[in-house]
Length: 428
Image (cartoon, rainbow, N blue to C red; front, side, top):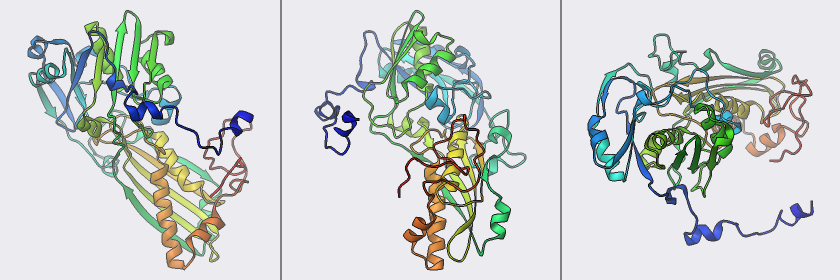
């Protein structure tokens, strides 16, 4: 406790501050290794297509090119973990598809990759590749993707899990029946890029049965577990190093870049560096999920809440399942205010839009934006002070009303939506 009290509330210098402001800090893109090759990626110009043929012979013959990858060279192992699962150990999407697949599913999807002695040779080699595509029907809007007859983004269906994810407590019908006032609104949020000053970068160095990755990610243990699993390596044979990171915003948690770099390193027998351009960061870096959220709130005339209903439709793009983000958007809607009756229906939808995924807040910003917009509208139309309304209805230390339905020996989520779960601290 003494150590904690010597830090909390005190002004202390950042341990990494001097290195950053003097330029001594080493980011993943600053690292150099003997014999290192440079990776460049050929990306799809189409939102959905089958690769009918791909000719890489001229690229392979180009001076300085040491290795080329296409879908024919890549193990068909699902790589994309769900957003929250990836932070805890990289569990895989069981219905996933491999990286460098014979089907491309968004503009910017990986088609092929080259490792060469310098960036210029790698870029020149990409231009020599000849790819013939068979365009397929595509869908970019999540609601359209859920309609019967919509283009199929994934073989298992466009709705992740095949049904809505439901979170609830109490009796929502009873709550609305008791309400004197009922308000409803629908709110939308767009794609958002984290746009870190440092685009994604990594170095993969495969030597024998040992793989080392230097990566600008904050989730070295999750990346390590994912790479060990997809390459069928013992965990002890994989090492992931996180150098100084040029910001993440919760957004640098994927392993696709490291996976491709590792395969090229293994094929070429040399370390390989991959650095996204700013354009690639915007195209292929994970984006915040676009959302369409409908909220319905029932209240008494004195402002007491009787029912809260939320429905989120999140566009996850073609790969990352995104169910954790959708669930968090619902938790944000139904756990913030004291209300005995609440329900959330969450729909996570595959589309041919860019890939969405982990991003600071994991769905809560979308949910809170919708919730607070409706609350402000209610207060404005009823003439209530919006701060007083929030102080009156904000969930208290005792938690939500109603019984707890999670067994005592079960982990309780950090944003509990059931009743009977007290908070250790809770301030507005």
